[in-house]
Amino acid sequence: MLVFKFGGASVKDAEAVRNVASIIKRFPSTNIAIVVSAMGKTTNKLEEIAHAFYHRNELAFNGHVSELEAYHVGISKELFSDEHADIHQILKQEVDRLKRWYVASVPENFSYLYDQLVSIGELLSSQLLNAFLTQESILSKWVDARTIIRTDSNYQEGKVLWNKTESLINAHLSPLFKNKDVIVTQGFIGHTSEGFTTTLGREGSDYTAGIIAYCTNAENVTIWKDVPGMLNADPKQFSDTVKLNQISFKEAIELSYYGASVIHPKTIKPLQNKGIPLYVKSFLDPDEPGTVIQESTAQDHLIPSFIVKRDQLLISITTKDFSFVAEEHLSDIFGRLNRMGLHVNLMQNSALDFSMVLDQKKVPIESFMDHFKDNYHVRYNEGLELVTIRHYNDHIIGKLTQEKVVLLEQRTRQTARLVLKPAF
Image (cartoon, rainbow, N blue to C red; front, top):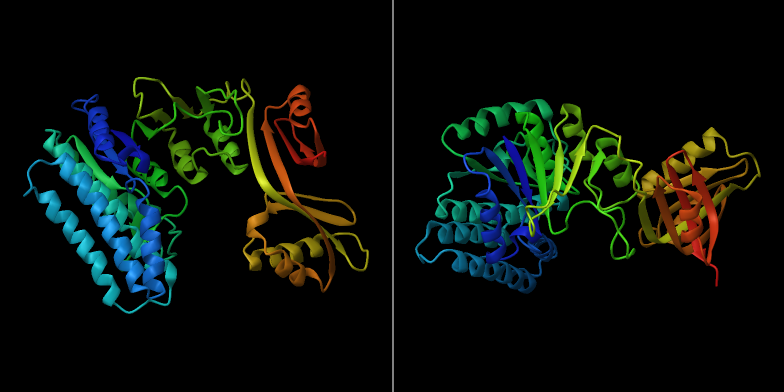
């Protein structure tokens, strides 16, 4: 069995849905589990709907719902010539269910509300795609991911309960391939034991593909994107990017950890555990080989990769009594950071100070200073860049630091990390 994941861009309009069907037709008589995201920018629209409902803005709520409905109905009418096709009624039922939410009481837990409303995007896209595949004479079956992906009740970041999920997938999804070639389900969403909808957090749709592949021992997973594969740098920041034909699971996890726009580690880890290859391919040019992520590290060092995080904040903390920054201080500092909900991108300490780099827009600096002023002195630099280079050499570092001042530098055998500011 193969697992295919199609993101929002790959199903953003009628032509894109037709293209997905053409890709599936390239694999006749093959068992394929399709994981699909919400169409286009639907998730953003549903987030606006959730906020409008939570703040009781009925005008905004109704307006956003009408736009969402018009978008999906428009795609449906382009794909299905029969005005009485079942899919039109299915879409209407989903939208009507969304509209009925406004007369309900507002739950105290916004994350719970978020998951119940935003998940509708995947339900719309997956049912529309399944109906079109069926119209194209592909033996396809729709499966509700809320019946096969079991999570805890940590809304917006549901933790997968693996044993139960594997049992549900083997009971309710795998047997369907006896009569169908293709199963269509939703990425990003799951359910609690009480039946409430949850979402899986960042890159949740990719993660769903990894979960299904792990539980079914799939042959491989393909994530279809609008790029030719994984690149060694962001093409918006570097003009001479190179495609990575093959990298290891370990390398992909490292790149993601440092901030590269690659597959999230939570998607990669279950595949790594069972040695299931992950392909990143272009839905615009499906004949191209793309990138394969697999176990071998043999090619990892061949091409340097670059990750640049802009708008960084370098904060240095010293103790007011000028004592060494010891274990008790580090424990205290991280406890305060955790209570503020802050994530550190890089850290370094010396005898007398502790330095860290964070995303500037996520740090309320005045509040930060207040949190630490009792026992610490705090200094900071704004508007910096954090550059990470995998498989670096001195020539590359010299080139990237031209007309820059290096405020902090760390090197290991494989990775160099530099905090930079303009020289002028």
